[in-house]
Image (tube, rainbow, N blue to C red; front, side):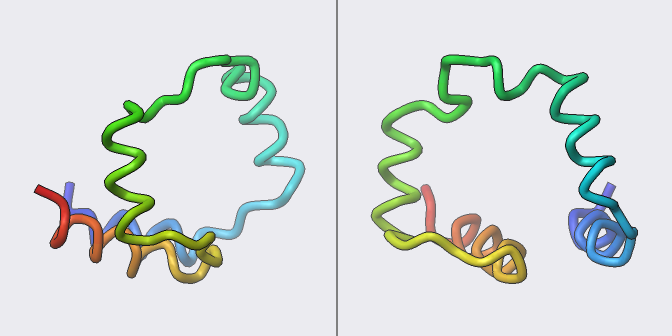
Length: 70
């Protein structure tokens, strides 16, 4: 599936906060102690984008990282 379609779909699909909380609870993602990114990869990303980004900047940040990471 094309990632632009996915980004478009996610940007225009209304999701309520309670829906997000339900998914978080069901998935158990917050119960994990391990970082899902390897330390070296996380460091590479943080060198390129050292500051926190806003939610509306995620797609641009993703594209930037795809173009600039080896």
